[in-house]
Image 1 (cartoon, rainbow, N blue to C red):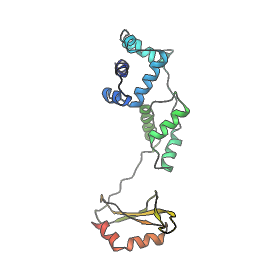
Image 2: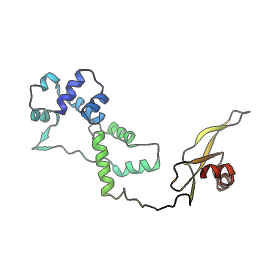
Image 3: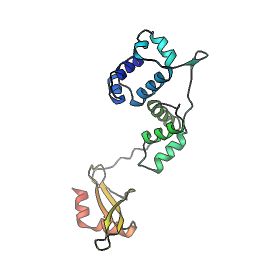
Image 4: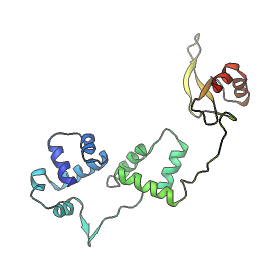
Length: 201
């Protein structure tokens, strides 16, 4: 019984991560069950005296013979947030969601429903493109920047933009920094012999 095992390991002092690894479930699920047990005052010694069904009825209350179904988060807004900022991930967005809705979905439920939503709304549709190895060079500016270019005299820091390239199907990526992001700067990077040689290695 998962709840009983979580209570046992909790009282032994194990962390949520170690408990999750032991019973093969998400850390967030462990935390959710621990929270529910604290709220109803259920300890391991008490749970040992109960049947599985009795434990479930305490930890997961039901109404009219049916379990409460929590509504879906704003998955459309979550998808937009992921597309607009590549530094954000589902873990970050779930934590933000739970801060606004403490009784909301656990992380594992959140991910599973989001995955189903993407399938149902066609968000997972992609197009496969056949490419011949070494025939095409793919080039573009990288979205992220780094504050690494500085003036040694004034100490002023500038943003570095990165122009990247790779050959089709290659696993090696070549990049060059530039103080500005423009077509002219990109053209100069492409024409650099070392840039082309590295891309073909």
